[in-house]
Amino acid sequence: DEKVDFADILVMASKIDGLERIRFTTSHPKDMSDKLIDTIASHDKLCEHIHVPLQAGSNKILQRMNRGYTREHYLELAQKMRERIPGVAITSDLIVGFPGETDEDFENTLDMVRKVRFDAAFTFLYSIRTGTKAATFEDQVPLEVKKSRLLELNRVQYGIALELNKKLEGTCQELMVEGPSKTNPEKLSGRTRTNRIVIFSGQNNLIGSLINVKITKGKTFSLFGDVQQNDK
Image 1 (tube, rainbow, N blue to C red):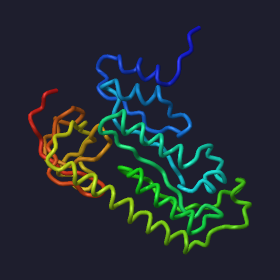
Image 2: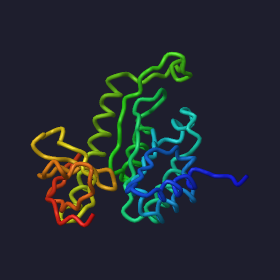
Image 3: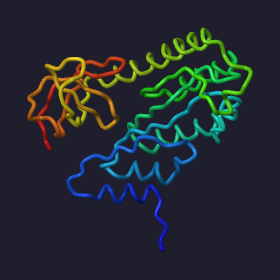
């Protein structure tokens, strides 16, 4: 029997009639192969958004987490994705305050955030999980230090996200309309191919359809736009 990998499955899914978008959300960095990157790049139905959890930017902490990759490997991976997938959005998960994390380790995480320039990131404080090896480590980071580091991490990441979103002002984006906006039910919201939320004025009959929207304003967590002529 011929072996089938995940990239092959994505290609098969892209051939399904009536399926307009496929969003492959999360990959462990060690599983993000060249073949998978090239598959996403070469199939229009596969969205240009990849969530690849980094967790930490320090090789010492990554080893302690047993993540199985280094910061150098992750940087190379991010560079490949940006080179091969035009306009790709890379998002991630980041944890601060893992046991043993020093100021230098945390600065390495900030350095990675600045180098990769994540379109968005989910950020967390490390918290003890009973039964895990990390819970037994004696060099736990004080809560106040973890809180301070999270604030600084968010400050850096939010600034990058805002800058990237502002660059989209004036561009036309394809949008999958999801429904009323959670922040303003009088407006609709949808997602771009890069998984950005766009809020706009429109009729409810647009829900569930693909439309084109011109971006008028970019904020840290969302975009605002006006509906353009729909070609779909």
